[in-house]
Image (cartoon, rainbow, N blue to C red):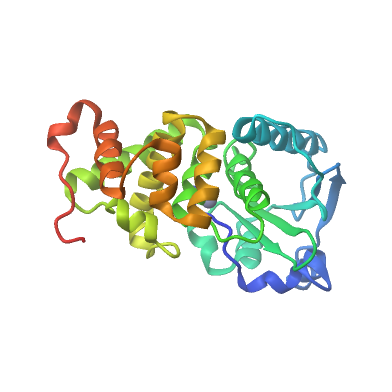
Length: 280
Ligand SMILES: [Zn+2]
């Protein structure tokens, strides 16, 4: 599972000053530049050469994200370019990402520089065969969302829920199964909990968090459109969840949202779904 996010990490400093190349060289994994395109700079720490065609695929993915979520082409170039480091070994990935590496296959990092653009950085454990179709779209979604809501802190359920929608369908199905299992067991997050989470939950609840976040974002996206969902997010950030639910989805409360969402999530098995009993 791609457990990853836009959290600041301890190695943030390497995005300033010496840059990623200097830090990785110190760690014994010299970075080689694969190439640059309009919006990306790709680096590799592996011994195997990387096909420069990956840059074109990054550009295509970026354009596709904008079209999907905004019905429009990107309006501006990313400056500085989004830097993507393809780690050729698990050890190199772990050195770059830190403790979170143990449970992630990729990680993104974005940071708003006051008065300037956003620093965008993605680390990918390129030892995984499907990183191009799985980890990269997921992490690029995080970067895209950071661009859309620059300077604002996105709720985690929105950030991860939307990113998981870029994962392969099979992976999404596994996340959905996690959510259904937690609901049936009575240990799922209530909607009000999910919406109010300030950060990631403890790691023992990651599977249900990702599953429910994906399910809830998909429920809202399907109800209208991806662009309407982003409008919901903008209103939620400025005026709160309830105002946004009312204005975009004509849903009067978080409780009503939960009823409608769970009815859809459970589908034909609605009658066996039980809500957690010990939560507010
Ligand atoms: Zn993520």
